[in-house]
Length: 443
Ligand code: IMP
Ligand code: MG
Image (cartoon, rainbow, N blue to C red):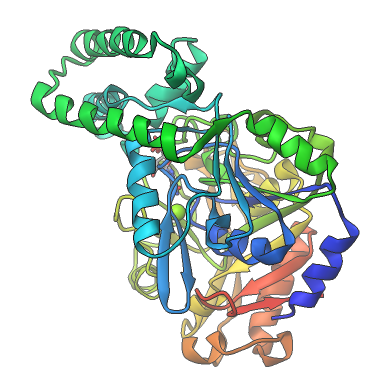
């Protein structure tokens, strides 16, 4: 890995924001890239949207860390980690995560929580469950972390924010909101909550709030970030979920309840969008999706199973098997445009080793016979048109040892070049394994 190249590039840029965005349905490997980029080059890593529904897996020296709401800079002791105002999260979920990190000797003292971030209540989680159960076969496949009900209360101006925990009427406001939630559960979803279970959750909730108040910093993170930028420091904005789960640009309603695209960075952190210098678009050599919703290139055969097994494609948050499919260049290119991607990073190149023929979708045939290269309103009507690539003669083990482009098989390079050409964005990093050093930086 050529660290000098990144160092040189970043040295020239001071006081800028780089954004890391997953270009598909999440689980592209953003955690590894944020951790890699943050090693010495960025002073702050900030989450601008999402919640504990995210799952970022990072492997360092044989040890696996799974992060949900804690930013990926936490593994670098010098980095400040910000949970921005665009995030929502349950206090007990946060405390569980930091406790696990502390048990692994990772210091979590450098975490700053926006006073404007919204609090997920235990009843938000119950509402999530009630809503999914009521939808039956039409369920979204939510992670059931209470994300949608929390954002709904935020937009409805009924929510509670982390800054509110210092107010004397916090408990009363909590009780009032909880009462509304229970009414809604019963009237809208005919869902009767288990009160004993709820009391247990509430106890954990309030204990966690107290711990956050004493051991962590709730503050104006917009000021913190802007002061750092003015002092010439660089900030990495860490996306969660993926661009295709965006509330506006995903396949509604099979989306998450926040904006996940680059456009959300300004609002989600309280920063000038013109500060954004780089947008790293992360994608895998193939694509995956957890939860329901259209997926034109999904594989229902043994190749899909092989990718799932070799790629360990099981949800980091829910453990669900991920749906696997061929690369979809139509979706990828479109998201490069929507997100203003300046540099592409391809993850998990090693996983396609041993597959004799690789396919990538380069267009869709629609029911009226037309062929398009931009996703239609109803993606479920799109029939993929494939370009076929020969596989490469290299094992996963061998590819994980590659450290420069020269080490890679020509068929693999051809596949990557086809992606670059189609998307018209350069590749910056090729990741060939889960570990920090299994990365090839392209100059
Ligand atoms: P929710 O955001 O938990 O309500 O889930 C909505 C949809 O987004 C479901 O299909 C989830 O599986 C999916 N989703 C949410 N967060 C992630 C993530 O971090 N990675 C992948 N899929 C996610
Ligand atoms: Mg994930």
